[in-house]
Amino acid sequence: MSSPASSGNTQELASRLGLESGLVVQEIGHDSDSDQDLRAGIVELTGSDMVDLDYEDVVDVAILWFREDDGDLTDALVDSITPLADQGVVWLLTPKPGRDGHIEPEDITEAAQTAGLRQTSTISAGSQWQGTRLVAPRAKR
Image: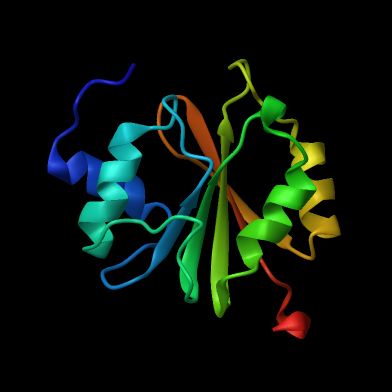
């Protein structure tokens, strides 16, 4: 379990995702193991709560928490891009190597390509999670 972080630290975590004030962020797959500091930082940085799957408008960013046992990654990625704005980004958050639920990089690449996405970077998104930035290829935008 992570220790409480100061506001600056939580916002620093969220800023690694390229988020800024005013963006609409949809969160998918949140569970008790999700990084609470990162979640708090996203809310602080964007200035509003994250929306869930019931949100009926376009979103700027989708945060997808995904673990090995969560089902089909390709299906989850397709679901996450449905409400995305044209320049929207999916951040796939998966447990780091050696953690329960870790997903191999080649499985992420394959699922992303099948879903029509391209991987652009991978970052540390907290002590237990890594983030993979996925975007639609420019030709499809």
